[in-house]
Length: 197
Length: 325
Image 1: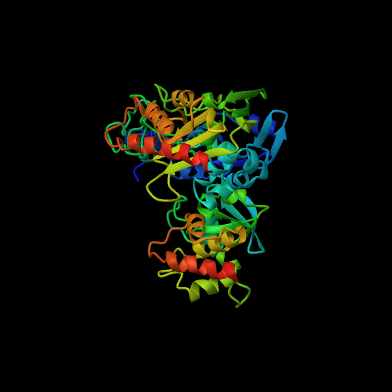
Image 2: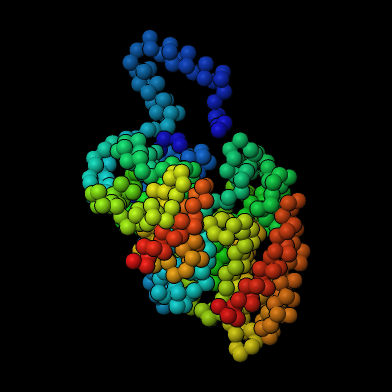
């Protein structure tokens, strides 16, 4: 997307040649340049973070801008949670934070230390699939599978919260997870199956 | 996202000391992180206030105090809210998705920015995002926009459902200003109309922090309704919403409250219709007459004329539902 910057091309050429010339100038001026640069250029910050994902602790350094979703996918290679819209509209990135479903794309990694995060990778018990994973297989709860990790994390929470009294209630409390393939009937069935067992 | 510095506070004075024009507080982040990704909010530093503000819902002498950090889900499920202020719960559950309600805070809900598509499109002029640049919506695609209280400069609507219920129940916003002084703002004065300063959403003073929302004891726990009409059944912003509450004595209306979302720059109270309902018999004819009073003089834009009859129907339905909540 096009961004609006307050700097013109001329400003860029002028300042960059001026800054280039600064390389030949004594230390005091360089210090002044550093000061100006710090004033103009946004400050990036790397934060040391200790996060708990699927009962495993990770110590990692991350830019303040890193979302939990990017931390999982890009830094920790936990690519189960998916980036669908990255704006909190599709639910593909749903994980559990302290046992409650949340959107990892709208959660800053910097705000996660001290909390327990569970992703789709942490749901199964070894080779034993979680009942909800089994149900999704049994009831055709997916087609392409892209939204599925988010759907399953949301579905597990939906059952835990007890919002399974009717199809209408399940649909309402699963509305934060979109499925472009339209596997909704299978998803509702999966939830009913787990809720009944 | 523009790079920013990050810190976390645990005390109110600490948070207030850090706050300035280029620093923003973050709580749930469900709106702010999104706005930062789109370069609409570009703070130089963020202060995490999730451990600074109260997560408690506590009764006090005059009613109920809701901590600013109470998450939407906790608010909707709270036993006292359900028993004494069920309209609040109903409105919260009509908004967003379970994931977002688990994250979003009460204070943050009040401070949500508009969802006007032109506010979100940084290539388009928008007086709210960039004062003086013009309003793209007024002559653009404006089916989601305001039908009342707007100005030449802005036709955006406030997106919150919770705030519609809080407006109907005459809540009070308790805040701390930068100097540490406690301020209380009646809900009707909290959000602003756009006028010539659509960049300002509310009357919270610069660098202040919302501490809690206060609800007075009321007589609306029995006959209430929240009707929300939208493009899909769930997880969408309102085209039109109505919070209605009646205090009935037999079949007579002692007092009525009517507020709407999706119609104006702030949660909108239909005061004239409320006044009309007072003392009347609660029946379909009365409700229709009240709805007609509410829609009188509305000025829809080119693409949202449908909101007027929709609002009329929503008011009648909501008042009817009050009789059988």
